[in-house]
Image 1 (cartoon, rainbow, N blue to C red):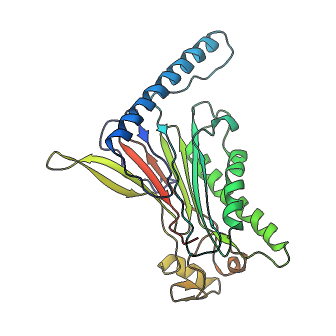
Image 2 (cartoon, rainbow, N blue to C red; image 1 turned 90 degrees about the horizontal axis):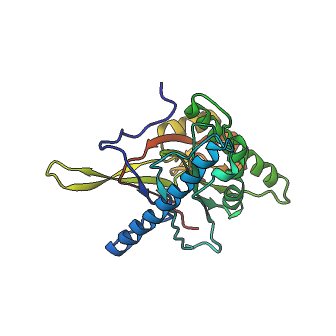
Image 3 (cartoon, helix red, strand yellow; image 1 turned 90 degrees about the vertical axis):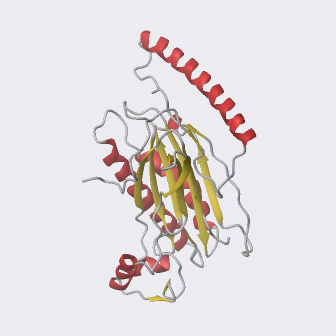
Length: 298
């Protein structure tokens, strides 16, 4: 039984991947940008080849045991944000195209990237806290050493990371006078070599644009959802809230909260609002582009 809600398998042979990971809003690409991206990819490829050559020399001297894998995705992150009707910007984001340096990776892995968006509500403190701490908790819990079944360990790592981040924020929030009532969605994209793991809470979305051949022979983009929305109108979410003693009115928890899973929102945790993320896994192909958006008004 698979540990993740996997997306469809690639329909074309794999190859070097050029991808734009997490963005706060979808970005259009023109010919000049594509040409610039190709140049950047060539520069990155030359740097990688030089690094691999140096790594092989060091390995021959017994200085290191692992050489980076070939044909890994070239990842770039772009962000656009706009404050809405709120008095302060309540959204936050993190872009870490290379997180490998702060991890002790298992021998079979070469590269890890992390991208995340957080849509705060009731204030900006929960989203900022998650942006500052979630990836540090992830680094502490990430599997290390020679391990088997890395997928299972990454799933466990992500679940524990979200739980720990939520507990830490709730502890800090409850110690304030008056107590903080902030909450936040969270959509985290973890790219491990050429495999994408997505963990999300709430209604911030992650999507993937995959170019595929159509029946007429033309190539068209297909948009695939990488995240699952959590709101109290969904049957499973509503049943959990009602079993915990809560109610759903006008599509909101107690008629107030629009999401059924979040970081923070301490006043709703006892009535079924949880911080356990949905997890999805996706194998990258040669023509994938990914994006995420908070979709909030903060």
